[in-house]
Image (tube, rainbow, N blue to C red; front, side):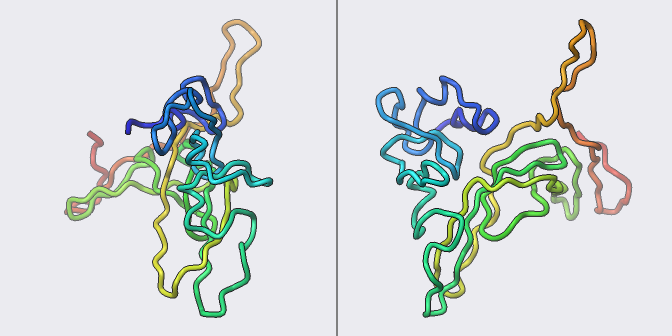
Length: 205
């Protein structure tokens, strides 16, 4: 499936292409079925993919809700007496120092750094390029739910599900020809540092 229209704009800024395009998961034509924005993945999904409406968070699509034991702001049920692990599954809206706003799935607690893009530069070691992670400036909880899993169950890695430019404090001068700003850009732009026989920054290609 091609990239969903909801992944091409800031969260909550849906347009006709989102509401009348394909379902974010099954591809159903949304012009012929009811739809809504999932509060976890932020995609417009059809009624068939919607697992129900949570009174505090709004609709939660079935792929995001399963195989959990409910949605909400706390544990869905008491701790299991059999020693099962309680996993905290969250989607955050995160403002990053690289100038991006991302929706981030995390199995755990609040992130402090996110591997987002190569705007801040990176490191080459043994021929492998690794971009520097971005610092987290601000975090907003979009959804939070809990699951009991067998002891020793692995945790999913953090996953960036959507990326948009930061637009905090945009400014347009009221005077003709005056200055304006479209919002947040990185305070610095990094270079690539190569550790393969040199400590000087490599020239980005």
